[in-house]
Image (cartoon, rainbow, N blue to C red; front, side, top):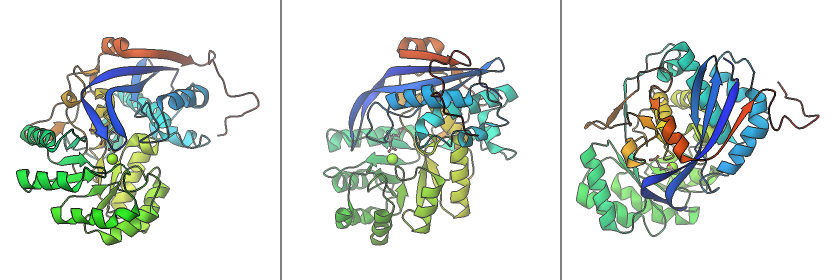
Length: 387
Ligand code: OSB
Ligand code: MG
Protein backbone atom coordinates (compact mmCIF):
# COMPACT_ATOMS: atom_id res chain seq x y z
CA UNK A 1 0.00 0.00 0.00
CA UNK A 2 1.25 3.42 -0.92
CA UNK A 3 -0.26 6.82 -0.10
CA UNK A 4 0.27 9.06 -3.13
CA UNK A 5 -1.65 12.09 -1.95
CA UNK A 6 -2.95 13.42 1.37
CA UNK A 7 -5.71 15.96 1.75
CA UNK A 8 -6.42 17.74 5.03
CA UNK A 9 -9.63 19.57 5.78
CA UNK A 10 -10.63 21.47 8.89
CA UNK A 11 -14.39 21.17 9.37
CA UNK A 12 -16.91 22.91 11.57
CA UNK A 13 -20.15 21.07 12.30
CA UNK A 14 -22.86 22.18 14.73
CA UNK A 15 -23.65 19.66 17.49
CA UNK A 16 -27.30 18.65 17.86
CA UNK A 17 -26.96 19.39 21.58
CA UNK A 18 -24.15 21.18 23.44
CA UNK A 19 -21.70 18.90 25.21
CA UNK A 20 -20.31 19.87 28.60
CA UNK A 21 -17.46 18.18 30.45
CA UNK A 22 -15.39 19.34 33.39
CA UNK A 23 -13.36 21.34 30.78
CA UNK A 24 -16.29 23.39 29.55
CA UNK A 25 -19.12 23.44 27.03
CA UNK A 26 -19.00 23.20 23.23
CA UNK A 27 -21.77 23.88 20.72
CA UNK A 28 -19.85 23.13 17.52
CA UNK A 29 -17.28 20.52 16.70
CA UNK A 30 -14.12 21.66 14.87
CA UNK A 31 -12.12 18.72 13.57
CA UNK A 32 -9.78 17.57 10.83
CA UNK A 33 -10.58 14.97 8.19
CA UNK A 34 -7.72 13.30 6.32
CA UNK A 35 -8.13 11.73 2.90
CA UNK A 36 -5.38 9.42 1.68
CA UNK A 37 -5.32 8.50 -2.03
CA UNK A 38 -3.42 5.56 -3.46
CA UNK A 39 -3.92 2.56 -5.77
CA UNK A 40 -6.85 4.43 -7.31
CA UNK A 41 -8.91 4.56 -4.09
CA UNK A 42 -9.35 6.95 -1.16
CA UNK A 43 -9.21 6.19 2.55
CA UNK A 44 -10.58 8.50 5.23
CA UNK A 45 -9.30 9.36 8.68
CA UNK A 46 -10.89 11.56 11.34
CA UNK A 47 -8.81 13.37 13.90
CA UNK A 48 -10.12 13.60 17.47
CA UNK A 49 -8.13 16.71 18.42
CA UNK A 50 -10.28 19.66 19.45
CA UNK A 51 -9.89 23.42 19.21
CA UNK A 52 -8.50 23.73 22.72
CA UNK A 53 -5.74 21.80 24.51
CA UNK A 54 -8.04 20.75 27.38
CA UNK A 55 -8.73 17.06 26.90
CA UNK A 56 -5.20 16.61 25.52
CA UNK A 57 -2.24 18.79 24.59
CA UNK A 58 -3.00 18.53 20.87
CA UNK A 59 -5.23 20.98 19.02
CA UNK A 60 -6.38 21.18 15.40
CA UNK A 61 -3.57 23.64 14.70
CA UNK A 62 -0.83 21.41 16.15
CA UNK A 63 -2.25 18.45 14.20
CA UNK A 64 -2.17 20.42 10.95
CA UNK A 65 1.43 21.47 11.55
CA UNK A 66 2.64 17.98 12.51
CA UNK A 67 0.93 16.25 9.60
CA UNK A 68 2.01 18.88 7.05
CA UNK A 69 5.61 19.21 8.19
CA UNK A 70 6.51 15.83 9.68
CA UNK A 71 4.02 13.04 8.95
CA UNK A 72 3.28 13.69 5.26
CA UNK A 73 6.99 13.57 4.29
CA UNK A 74 7.33 10.25 6.14
CA UNK A 75 4.37 8.48 4.58
CA UNK A 76 3.93 9.90 1.05
CA UNK A 77 5.24 7.51 -1.57
CA UNK A 78 6.39 4.99 1.06
CA UNK A 79 5.44 1.34 0.51
CA UNK A 80 3.76 -0.12 3.61
CA UNK A 81 3.13 -3.87 3.72
CA UNK A 82 0.33 -3.30 6.27
CA UNK A 83 -1.23 -0.24 7.97
CA UNK A 84 0.02 -1.54 11.33
CA UNK A 85 3.48 -0.47 10.11
CA UNK A 86 2.54 3.22 9.85
CA UNK A 87 2.76 4.09 13.57
CA UNK A 88 6.21 2.48 13.99
CA UNK A 89 7.42 4.48 10.94
CA UNK A 90 6.43 7.69 12.77
CA UNK A 91 8.44 6.83 15.86
CA UNK A 92 10.97 9.66 15.40
CA UNK A 93 8.08 12.08 16.01
CA UNK A 94 7.49 12.29 19.75
CA UNK A 95 3.91 12.46 20.94
CA UNK A 96 1.24 13.93 18.66
CA UNK A 97 -0.73 10.69 18.78
CA UNK A 98 -3.93 12.27 17.47
CA UNK A 99 -2.14 13.57 14.36
CA UNK A 100 -0.54 10.15 13.80
CA UNK A 101 -3.80 8.31 14.37
CA UNK A 102 -5.72 10.44 11.86
CA UNK A 103 -3.32 9.59 9.02
CA UNK A 104 -3.00 6.00 10.19
CA UNK A 105 -6.80 5.57 10.18
CA UNK A 106 -6.91 6.75 6.55
CA UNK A 107 -4.22 4.17 5.76
CA UNK A 108 -6.30 1.36 7.35
CA UNK A 109 -9.39 2.41 5.41
CA UNK A 110 -7.39 2.62 2.18
CA UNK A 111 -5.81 -0.81 2.77
CA UNK A 112 -9.13 -2.49 3.61
CA UNK A 113 -10.83 -0.90 0.57
CA UNK A 114 -8.03 -2.09 -1.73
CA UNK A 115 -8.49 -5.60 -0.31
CA UNK A 116 -12.26 -5.21 -0.72
CA UNK A 117 -13.02 -6.20 2.86
CA UNK A 118 -14.63 -4.41 5.82
CA UNK A 119 -12.15 -2.83 8.21
CA UNK A 120 -13.29 -5.17 11.01
CA UNK A 121 -11.99 -8.09 8.96
CA UNK A 122 -8.61 -6.45 8.41
CA UNK A 123 -8.42 -5.70 12.14
CA UNK A 124 -9.45 -9.28 13.06
CA UNK A 125 -6.39 -10.51 11.10
CA UNK A 126 -7.72 -14.02 10.56
CA UNK A 127 -10.13 -14.02 13.53
CA UNK A 128 -13.89 -13.64 13.25
CA UNK A 129 -15.13 -10.16 14.12
CA UNK A 130 -18.45 -9.82 15.97
CA UNK A 131 -21.27 -8.52 13.78
CA UNK A 132 -22.83 -6.11 16.29
CA UNK A 133 -21.30 -4.04 19.09
CA UNK A 134 -22.75 -2.99 22.44
CA UNK A 135 -23.53 0.71 22.68
CA UNK A 136 -23.54 3.06 25.66
CA UNK A 137 -24.05 6.82 25.94
CA UNK A 138 -22.07 9.62 27.53
CA UNK A 139 -24.32 12.36 28.92
CA UNK A 140 -22.70 15.72 29.49
CA UNK A 141 -23.16 18.01 32.48
CA UNK A 142 -26.63 19.61 32.31
CA UNK A 143 -28.09 22.86 33.59
CA UNK A 144 -30.20 21.06 36.20
CA UNK A 145 -30.87 17.62 37.68
CA UNK A 146 -34.26 17.69 35.96
CA UNK A 147 -32.58 18.19 32.59
CA UNK A 148 -30.28 15.28 33.44
CA UNK A 149 -33.23 13.06 34.38
CA UNK A 150 -34.86 13.90 31.04
CA UNK A 151 -31.73 12.91 29.12
CA UNK A 152 -31.30 9.66 31.06
CA UNK A 153 -34.96 8.73 30.46
CA UNK A 154 -34.59 9.36 26.73
CA UNK A 155 -31.40 7.30 26.37
CA UNK A 156 -32.78 4.37 28.36
CA UNK A 157 -35.89 4.42 26.15
CA UNK A 158 -33.61 4.38 23.08
CA UNK A 159 -32.15 1.08 24.39
CA UNK A 160 -28.59 2.08 25.27
CA UNK A 161 -26.88 -0.62 27.35
CA UNK A 162 -25.27 1.71 29.85
CA UNK A 163 -25.40 5.33 30.90
CA UNK A 164 -22.31 7.38 31.64
CA UNK A 165 -22.59 10.83 33.11
CA UNK A 166 -19.90 13.45 33.27
CA UNK A 167 -19.10 14.64 36.78
CA UNK A 168 -17.10 17.47 38.34
CA UNK A 169 -16.90 18.91 41.86
CA UNK A 170 -20.40 20.24 42.59
CA UNK A 171 -22.02 17.90 40.05
CA UNK A 172 -21.36 14.37 41.26
CA UNK A 173 -22.92 12.50 44.21
CA UNK A 174 -26.30 14.26 44.00
CA UNK A 175 -26.54 13.54 40.27
CA UNK A 176 -25.75 9.85 40.78
CA UNK A 177 -28.15 9.65 43.73
CA UNK A 178 -30.95 11.18 41.65
CA UNK A 179 -30.37 8.66 38.83
CA UNK A 180 -30.39 5.67 41.21
CA UNK A 181 -33.57 6.91 42.90
CA UNK A 182 -35.42 7.55 39.66
CA UNK A 183 -34.05 4.84 37.38
CA UNK A 184 -33.07 2.00 39.72
CA UNK A 185 -30.46 -0.60 38.88
CA UNK A 186 -29.43 0.52 35.39
CA UNK A 187 -25.81 0.04 34.27
CA UNK A 188 -24.30 3.36 35.31
CA UNK A 189 -20.82 4.91 35.38
CA UNK A 190 -19.26 8.35 35.79
CA UNK A 191 -16.43 10.20 34.01
CA UNK A 192 -14.62 13.02 35.82
CA UNK A 193 -12.17 14.01 33.06
CA UNK A 194 -9.44 14.57 35.64
CA UNK A 195 -11.42 17.06 37.73
CA UNK A 196 -10.39 15.77 41.21
CA UNK A 197 -7.26 15.31 43.31
CA UNK A 198 -6.31 12.71 45.88
CA UNK A 199 -7.51 15.15 48.55
CA UNK A 200 -11.04 14.35 47.30
CA UNK A 201 -10.67 10.62 48.05
CA UNK A 202 -13.23 10.58 50.90
CA UNK A 203 -15.73 12.47 48.79
CA UNK A 204 -15.23 10.11 45.82
CA UNK A 205 -15.65 7.14 48.17
CA UNK A 206 -19.26 8.28 48.72
CA UNK A 207 -19.86 7.01 45.17
CA UNK A 208 -19.11 3.46 46.40
CA UNK A 209 -22.70 3.28 47.68
CA UNK A 210 -24.14 3.41 44.17
CA UNK A 211 -22.80 0.23 42.56
CA UNK A 212 -21.25 2.06 39.60
CA UNK A 213 -19.61 0.00 36.85
CA UNK A 214 -16.57 2.27 37.17
CA UNK A 215 -15.35 5.79 37.76
CA UNK A 216 -13.43 7.06 34.75
CA UNK A 217 -10.32 9.24 35.05
CA UNK A 218 -10.97 10.89 38.42
CA UNK A 219 -7.45 12.34 38.76
CA UNK A 220 -4.85 14.16 36.67
CA UNK A 221 -4.46 13.36 32.99
CA UNK A 222 -0.90 12.15 33.28
CA UNK A 223 -1.11 10.65 36.73
CA UNK A 224 -0.81 6.95 37.48
CA UNK A 225 0.56 6.84 41.05
CA UNK A 226 -2.26 8.82 42.68
CA UNK A 227 -4.82 6.70 40.85
CA UNK A 228 -3.17 3.63 42.42
CA UNK A 229 -3.48 5.26 45.86
CA UNK A 230 -7.12 6.18 45.16
CA UNK A 231 -8.01 2.71 43.87
CA UNK A 232 -6.91 1.28 47.25
CA UNK A 233 -9.48 3.54 48.93
CA UNK A 234 -12.39 2.81 46.58
CA UNK A 235 -14.52 -0.28 46.05
CA UNK A 236 -15.59 1.08 42.65
CA UNK A 237 -13.26 0.15 39.78
CA UNK A 238 -11.20 2.99 38.33
CA UNK A 239 -11.07 3.17 34.53
CA UNK A 240 -8.29 5.21 32.95
CA UNK A 241 -8.81 7.34 29.84
CA UNK A 242 -6.56 10.44 29.64
CA UNK A 243 -3.66 8.85 31.58
CA UNK A 244 -3.08 6.06 29.05
CA UNK A 245 -1.10 7.44 26.10
CA UNK A 246 0.85 4.31 25.28
CA UNK A 247 1.30 0.61 25.98
CA UNK A 248 4.01 1.55 28.46
CA UNK A 249 1.51 3.67 30.42
CA UNK A 250 -0.93 0.76 30.44
CA UNK A 251 1.72 -1.68 31.66
CA UNK A 252 2.61 0.70 34.47
CA UNK A 253 -1.01 1.36 35.45
CA UNK A 254 -1.92 -2.33 35.47
CA UNK A 255 1.24 -3.23 37.40
CA UNK A 256 0.42 -0.66 40.09
CA UNK A 257 -3.33 -1.52 40.20
CA UNK A 258 -4.08 2.09 39.28
CA UNK A 259 -7.08 0.92 37.24
CA UNK A 260 -9.15 -2.21 36.66
CA UNK A 261 -10.59 -1.17 33.29
CA UNK A 262 -9.14 0.80 30.36
CA UNK A 263 -10.92 3.02 27.85
CA UNK A 264 -9.32 2.77 24.39
CA UNK A 265 -9.37 5.72 22.02
CA UNK A 266 -7.15 5.29 18.97
CA UNK A 267 -6.45 9.02 18.81
CA UNK A 268 -5.02 8.97 22.32
CA UNK A 269 -2.61 6.09 21.73
CA UNK A 270 -1.54 6.78 18.13
CA UNK A 271 -3.98 4.78 16.04
CA UNK A 272 -5.71 1.50 15.33
CA UNK A 273 -2.46 -0.50 15.34
CA UNK A 274 -1.53 0.69 18.84
CA UNK A 275 -5.14 0.19 19.98
CA UNK A 276 -5.01 -3.46 18.88
CA UNK A 277 -1.72 -3.91 20.75
CA UNK A 278 -3.22 -2.24 23.84
CA UNK A 279 -6.36 -4.38 23.58
CA UNK A 280 -4.19 -7.52 23.47
CA UNK A 281 -2.03 -6.38 26.39
CA UNK A 282 -5.12 -5.76 28.52
CA UNK A 283 -6.55 -9.17 27.55
CA UNK A 284 -3.34 -10.83 28.74
CA UNK A 285 -3.75 -9.13 32.12
CA UNK A 286 -7.48 -9.76 32.49
CA UNK A 287 -8.29 -6.05 32.14
CA UNK A 288 -11.55 -5.46 30.21
CA UNK A 289 -11.57 -2.60 27.72
CA UNK A 290 -14.23 -0.51 26.04
CA UNK A 291 -14.11 1.95 23.17
CA UNK A 292 -14.22 5.61 24.13
CA UNK A 293 -15.73 8.37 22.02
CA UNK A 294 -14.72 11.92 21.15
CA UNK A 295 -17.97 13.16 19.60
CA UNK A 296 -16.84 11.86 16.23
CA UNK A 297 -18.70 12.33 12.98
CA UNK A 298 -19.88 9.17 11.25
CA UNK A 299 -16.45 8.73 9.70
CA UNK A 300 -14.56 8.34 12.97
CA UNK A 301 -17.57 6.61 14.53
CA UNK A 302 -17.54 3.92 11.82
CA UNK A 303 -13.85 3.21 12.50
CA UNK A 304 -14.57 2.96 16.23
CA UNK A 305 -17.29 0.40 15.52
CA UNK A 306 -14.93 -1.76 13.45
CA UNK A 307 -12.26 -1.70 16.15
CA UNK A 308 -14.83 -2.59 18.84
CA UNK A 309 -15.37 -5.98 17.20
CA UNK A 310 -12.26 -7.39 18.93
CA UNK A 311 -13.12 -9.82 21.75
CA UNK A 312 -11.74 -7.96 24.80
CA UNK A 313 -13.99 -4.96 24.06
CA UNK A 314 -16.30 -6.61 26.58
CA UNK A 315 -18.07 -3.52 27.97
CA UNK A 316 -20.42 -1.17 26.05
CA UNK A 317 -18.51 1.68 24.38
CA UNK A 318 -19.17 5.41 24.04
CA UNK A 319 -20.32 4.77 20.48
CA UNK A 320 -23.86 6.01 20.11
CA UNK A 321 -26.12 6.75 17.14
CA UNK A 322 -25.26 9.58 14.72
CA UNK A 323 -28.39 11.57 15.51
CA UNK A 324 -27.24 12.35 19.07
CA UNK A 325 -24.36 14.34 17.56
CA UNK A 326 -24.84 15.60 14.00
CA UNK A 327 -27.92 15.91 11.86
CA UNK A 328 -27.21 15.35 9.07
CA UNK A 329 -24.04 13.33 9.62
CA UNK A 330 -21.20 13.13 7.06
CA UNK A 331 -22.12 9.57 6.16
CA UNK A 332 -25.08 7.76 4.67
CA UNK A 333 -26.90 5.94 6.12
CA UNK A 334 -26.35 7.35 9.64
CA UNK A 335 -25.16 5.03 12.44
CA UNK A 336 -28.24 3.71 14.24
CA UNK A 337 -28.74 1.92 17.52
CA UNK A 338 -31.25 -0.94 17.67
CA UNK A 339 -33.77 -1.31 20.49
CA UNK A 340 -31.44 -3.82 22.20
CA UNK A 341 -28.68 -1.19 22.41
CA UNK A 342 -26.46 -2.70 19.72
CA UNK A 343 -25.05 -1.27 16.50
CA UNK A 344 -24.50 -3.32 13.33
CA UNK A 345 -20.94 -3.35 12.03
CA UNK A 346 -20.93 -1.92 8.49
CA UNK A 347 -20.26 -4.65 5.94
CA UNK A 348 -18.97 -2.71 2.91
CA UNK A 349 -15.25 -2.37 2.13
CA UNK A 350 -13.11 -0.24 4.46
CA UNK A 351 -15.20 1.89 6.82
CA UNK A 352 -18.19 0.40 5.01
CA UNK A 353 -20.21 3.61 4.99
CA UNK A 354 -20.72 6.04 2.13
CA UNK A 355 -19.19 9.41 2.67
CA UNK A 356 -21.13 12.53 1.75
CA UNK A 357 -18.37 14.58 0.15
CA UNK A 358 -20.88 17.37 -0.53
CA UNK A 359 -21.47 17.79 3.20
CA UNK A 360 -17.74 17.65 3.89
CA UNK A 361 -17.24 20.38 1.29
CA UNK A 362 -19.95 22.52 2.88
CA UNK A 363 -18.45 22.21 6.36
CA UNK A 364 -14.86 22.92 5.27
CA UNK A 365 -13.10 25.95 6.79
CA UNK A 366 -9.64 25.22 5.42
CA UNK A 367 -8.03 22.62 3.17
CA UNK A 368 -4.62 21.67 1.82
CA UNK A 369 -3.23 18.80 -0.22
CA UNK A 370 0.18 17.20 -0.09
CA UNK A 371 1.78 15.20 -2.86
CA UNK A 372 5.25 13.83 -3.39
CA UNK A 373 7.35 16.43 -5.17
CA UNK A 374 5.01 19.29 -4.38
CA UNK A 375 5.35 19.14 -0.60
CA UNK A 376 5.19 22.72 0.53
CA UNK A 377 7.41 21.91 3.43
CA UNK A 378 9.67 18.96 2.92
CA UNK A 379 11.73 17.78 5.86
CA UNK A 380 13.89 20.64 7.09
CA UNK A 381 17.19 20.73 5.18
CA UNK A 382 19.76 18.42 6.68
CA UNK A 383 17.17 16.37 8.58
CA UNK A 384 16.98 12.82 7.38
CA UNK A 385 13.99 10.57 7.69
CA UNK A 386 15.25 8.00 10.15
CA UNK A 387 14.15 4.52 9.22
O1 OSB B 1 -13.64 11.72 28.28
O2 OSB B 1 -14.65 10.28 27.16
C1 OSB B 1 -14.31 11.46 27.31
C2 OSB B 1 -15.97 13.68 24.67
C3 OSB B 1 -14.96 14.57 24.41
C4 OSB B 1 -13.79 14.47 25.12
C5 OSB B 1 -13.61 13.47 26.07
C6 OSB B 1 -14.61 12.55 26.32
C7 OSB B 1 -15.83 12.69 25.63
C8 OSB B 1 -16.98 11.82 25.86
C9 OSB B 1 -17.97 11.74 24.74
O3 OSB B 1 -17.23 11.28 26.91
C10 OSB B 1 -18.19 10.38 24.26
C11 OSB B 1 -18.97 10.41 22.98
O4 OSB B 1 -18.38 10.52 21.89
O5 OSB B 1 -20.19 10.31 23.08
MG1 MG C 1 -13.31 9.93 29.38
